[in-house]
Length: 78
Length: 228
Image (cartoon, rainbow over the protein chains, first blue to last red):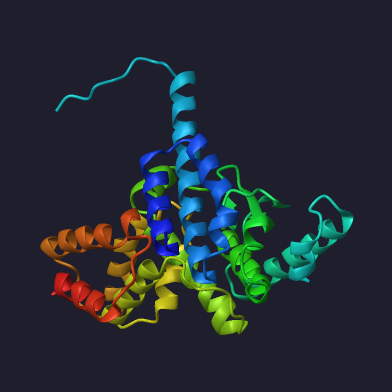
């Protein structure tokens, strides 16, 4: 697969599976991927992984807040 | 010096000394640019190996990952390390706002365009360094095109947005544009123009466009058309 194909595949993977395990799996493949890529492509992958990890952090933080603040949900009427 | 940092053991005293020296330089550069960094935890230099170069976490910890930076060709590493350090430091002007999570998920380009635009002004135009520049091209281009339509220097637009914490750019862009129009003696946006501008901004700065390449002439036409 070409580097561009790898980047597209990685983008789909980390967007579809926003969880820690997927990020671990993806990051393990990066040294091999980087060996075939230009500096620009490596940097695009870095931005992609940065966004994915931030998104996972935010989702985990939201889930943690919901676990610790289990108060009744208020439904606002019109 | 950045080469030493990238090659040394992050737990060594040599690395700690180099980190402190570079960080002091970053703080000085940002202060001189009138864009001072806020309080942070760290910076932490580590071999994280998660694929990103650097990040500013929610608790204001600034982390630089030398393992990923070492994936770059050797000639690109020093300047790209400094670029990352400055980019993440620009995010760290204040703690993230309450709106940061939503904005990050849906419209990351509002903040990344500001941080990357200012980073390029400092690192490339002022310091004449040559980092790898591919990050957030579309968002930077969208701001450049908007500045052209407003007939202002894009730096003025980015600096105005930098005054607010990360997570507030999406809500502050329109008030800033209205202020610029007022200062330039131009007519304020009508309610219809306001609504069209908001919709276009959301489409330009949506997270989905992170890998897109900008055509600034087309972007300028789009901004211009919603403001007519």
